[in-house]
Image (cartoon, rainbow, N blue to C red; front, side, top):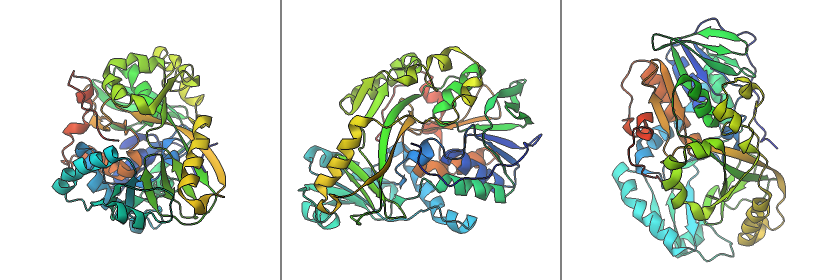
Length: 440
């Protein structure tokens, strides 16, 4: 079932013209709409389903700098600073808390990997500490596990997936943006190599700038316009408990990850345990993704599912330009993987005796859109002036969403972005450059 999300009201009619159209109502799209509107630009935010209906409400909710790929560190630092101010700016709680983030492990090799990342933390001034066995035991008490050590960032944290994107959307509306749900964008209008507008199921909108923040749908949306975006989706599973005893705020271990929600429940999952479903789009971009696949083969199950025939990676998506694919897939809502549901719960119960009687409230599946190097694309499209792509966040999008939205607003507003976006350019994925697979 889909996670519960704060619902946002749609505006009754679409505008005839705006400065910027944002396609996609997830954390990236709503952040872009908010920061663009804050600049005084007129914005229409378009979503084929409802705000935060796909990956942005299915995430763990982590907002972290710890253990990030070096290329993402400036974006992570920027995003954390922005998270700090959003609740006061908008006047609503997004659930953001710098609650701290603790990694604990009983695997020496994993501990060595975290230690190898410490120079990156020092380079960027991130407050993070290696934990001894005794220190890990103090931070994660009353467990039946013998930790060999861990890693801790006291300034990392979390936000609420059910609130964050909807509150950002409402913040954008308060600044003049309009919001249109159940409004799929069929395609782009261009003239002389420049954006001129978009065609939606509710009618056309004239504009000089478009942000494609369509998540797992981005590659399919761009393909009919001659833009190649190597993108693949992996299917993940998470569960939410009913309110239970407090055993920590944000915790990662080798066989489970847990995030305490505002109501006292937990979101639970297993990091890296995903299903890579063979699809036509996956086959199309197999060469680009092979280095990542080889590196993570042990953690990923491979199979064929409904995504071969339906959704953004399907046969229809690859070989048909029919925009009906967007209206027939309002919400990408894969079922959770049954084989993981029992494992997630058992791993947590066997670690924490006080959670032995915890009850699972609901579970869900998600398709996480990835790039070959597991680093997002935040980039203008060279072949179509006025078109910007922000997708492929590879499971990191929730935490860095505000930063991506802010940088898009700077680019569209004609400013030099606060950070160097070379590592986030689309061209790196299509110019034959060697793929350097990033940290998850």
